[in-house]
Image 1 (cartoon, one colour):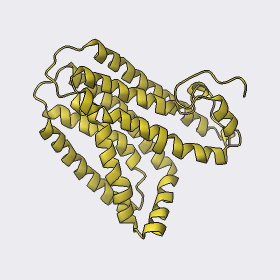
Image 2 (cartoon, helix red, strand yellow):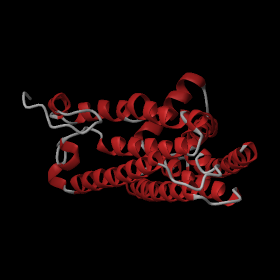
Image 3 (cartoon, rainbow, N blue to C red):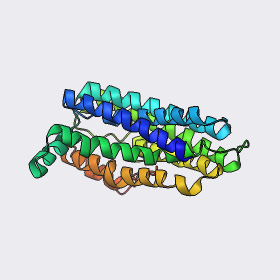
Length: 263
């Protein structure tokens, strides 16, 4: 297990270093969001290639991670190519320069790529560790995890597709997306992502890696609810969408729920 994890870490570090060099050349680290997902696919297959036997847990986790990572990674890459530099990274770059005197290369390495590499590796723990088992039977918990993860991947994809179509319509400029899945949750895409990874964690638990895999879904949940998910999108929406505050009051943050009728 240690050898496989260290090999994966070395591979991840090499790829992140190469991508950092590209970000310095183009003066934009925004594409790292796409690599957050696509790098998971690389780690999934790197693990799969190193294990001697491919049991049902390894097959399920590799398939789920690949489906989740390719769908999200290609979507985020498309969004970056369409919209250009992410305003979050522009703000962070200016902050690093003004407060700490960091140039772009140092900012990109220390504030973007190095943290993302560490976070990605921890989040991927259930998927990597869950493959490292000699079990040949897929227990009830693993079946539940497979269903939950597949549901989450599909739910997140539908939410992203609905939001993309909404934004593509010029008549929706300045409006709040409160249709489809977004009627029942302010962040249905993040809810789907959490389901996908808690489902993969359930498979890892069934494979016998409950403790060491737990930091993965816990960290992802913390990031989406407290750091890089809702906390970075909602202030901008409140400032640019006059109707957003009312939408926030009547709509559940993450778990889908019927809107509150008092608003």
